[in-house]
Length: 348
Image (tube, rainbow, N blue to C red):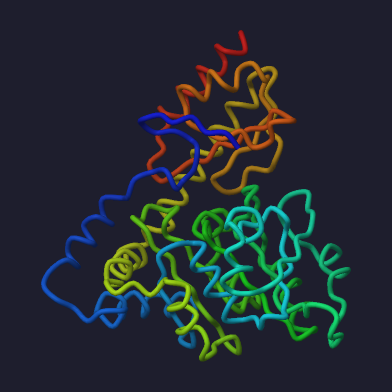
């Protein structure tokens, strides 16, 4: 993927947007006096209470700094060195984390080709083999992303089906929820309905892509709760001493429902891009737009000049497919300006 460096708001990634003002205010308020380190502070405690209100009282909460770190904590706590994790080949843990889960957590990733970034029962079943065979890595985890790297979203029923087959085989389900808020905004149901109530065992709930300075949280449910996670977090270098600044941001996000508001806005801006792009001759939106990502094939000659003004990735250079990602701070004017420029470049 190629990215042009530019100033101002673009559509390269929701990682590129700034922090919401409330997050800066939350950090400032937490920056008063001294507090216990390593998460034993009032902000982390209040945020943990809010998370348990969302997901259930029997939820273990581990705040972290990065999405990769959160996934390493989750998978490293679930797996032994001879275990494997089944995931879509597009999954972040497979394609964008520099083999951190393999190196740090010591696991084997089993990538599965998908058409839309989503695992299905038919795709998973062929990989549920080798149980008890010492010559084979042991299938231990089914890992799914919500929303996926293609911006598609699993329904609660789809998650439940994968959880049921995992549990039938003594396995567990990990959900990479870097864009969990976008999925929740799209589905319009309580977040626990497609997570813990659907059988997810461990959830990485992302904040960085949704208006926070930085910060993620790993949530362990039910039988997946274990004594390994605290040590895994420390070994993965994710136990920040001044963790109160992450807890304060989650507290602000959750207590005011801000996490859903910001995601719903980002989703709406993605739909605005898709609807406008589809009206431009020579432009084809290639995937369902459910969260805050839009994939489209453009005439090759217009990609580079459009990237010069509006930062975004070329997803598939062979096909001329690009990816636009909207953020909490994307504005209708940003979208309309890019669409107008695209229309000019294609000569309409």
